[in-house]
Length: 528
Image (spheres, rainbow, N blue to C red):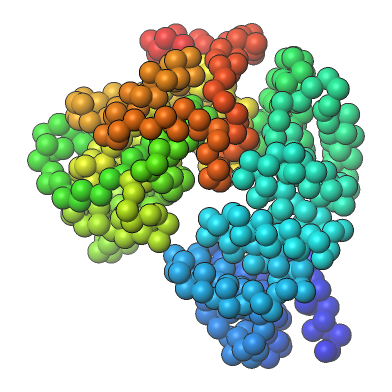
């Protein structure tokens, strides 16, 4: 291989490992232009396209790679990755199963196969292949990280911590591993990572090219561990530092989300709503809505511990199908306001059918399933019109605890309002307004469950919850912590424990720091 070609490939691999997609894309373009017969270049282009969310280009690029090397197992697994993104899940499963035999001795292929199974939601199989990759290459920090992550999803906190420890030992700058490790358990005076995290933070901010994301993750980690130890002043100091850092690198304006709520309330007036023709599907679906960190995962685990229910996790399918239908034949890009206004003219029968078709490969045909994306609260009225037999469960939690719980959580990409206290407060007020509107439009349709009631009075609250889903009582719902199904949300570690109420009123440890939020709620007439 020519030295220039080899150099470009090495650069490309490094950029992919570091997830520097802009640099990887530019290198792919140069490699594929100058060396079009290099299959690795086309495979890398597919991987980059998929990470950027472009499944169609990902499939085109990997087809070119396979045309050059039809038996390359790595290329076939990369194709499976693109198929998952394109929602062609059954094809992805078939391709992966066919490619796996060739992966038995190649740790990179084993790791890639684990990644496909993880994307498909088969975390037990993902764990098998990640474990094999680690056994073949125990000194690869990426493989250790991937295995740690899937162990966390499956509830093996001890095994996950061991793998995260290894990942950090092999790559001290893996601050994501540091962050996830801190969240696995309650830290103690005798067993915590505060000294280690402090050293990592010093190294991070003194590096030649300051890594603000790394600093942010370490700050959130230190905030969590200090809170576990009761060091509340230190905890909030690091929390605010991390949140401010994240907020300073965003262009988010809470006014946009407030305007969205205003547009929904205005567009879906009672006369308009009552005149919309409903769909006819009788598929049993339970939508669990609310705000993140308010107990939606707990409610989902309680319901899905029932023998007749399957948890499909947090799906954005309803919003995608709704948006796709509203934009169809629009002739151009729509503003948020215009998009909302177009939704009242949707064929809600079609919307319901499209939603169900989009989730078909992810759910059990014979059972009721839950969709627990919290932000579906925006679409409660549309959900009821599209799927009139669906149950909508609204999880509520005290205003101050809700906002503090969101503020201290570092989300991957969602919930940009959560890094500034006043943004959070104003968003909460808007959310309350919209939910009040939906309740008024659809009396008796949305069923509420209080997080505080569920954890203080587990059995009676759980029985009401199951009854609201029109299901017979199943005592397994009281043992949700024994539910073996994977949990992939921010509460993945917490839901492995029986009900506890220590999170109620936790905001009171920070009354002085949270006073601006308290004042905002008082002015808005909200009982915080």
